[in-house]
Image 1 (cartoon, rainbow, N blue to C red):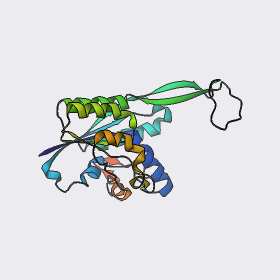
Image 2 (cartoon, rainbow, N blue to C red):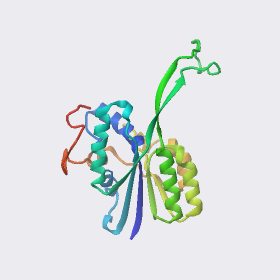
Image 3 (cartoon, rainbow, N blue to C red):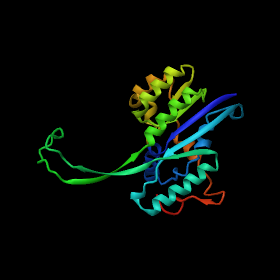
Length: 226
């Protein structure tokens, strides 16, 4: 029996799902990641799966956003998907520093203060998990659901300590599946994995949604618009 580890970069996927849902008016954010990944296996019963979802509650976006996310986390947990949460940190930046000038910009630089919120811990948590699981040989194949290049060092280290462990990138699809034709945006990380990426389709994503009423939970995007 093969050990399959699935690491999900929640916000990396969420933003792509959000864009697709808004443009196409089709709910795709109520996604069952377990059903999605297992749809690509012919022998699900002959594999041992471990799913870990990494994300953070965006409290700066308001109570409703957090409540929707908490409902979604509960739905994932019913599927034995482990949830690891980071946090958002408020950061004040200058809109334009004196030493900076964008290409072709003729505007005067200023010192306007902007407040941003940056997700913290998620990338670090994923990177640590990649290396920890490699050290303990906790997978035969590890699927990383992300197109983030911040994991390249962790992937390189995992391949060093556990060269027989297979690592496969699963990037979120582009709106028109154009990533099948233009894989260059994950090419650097792909070279480290030494494995062909798994390009999932929007059709599979649409077919892998939780039911609107699921184990006492209601799809939080069913009635709130897109």
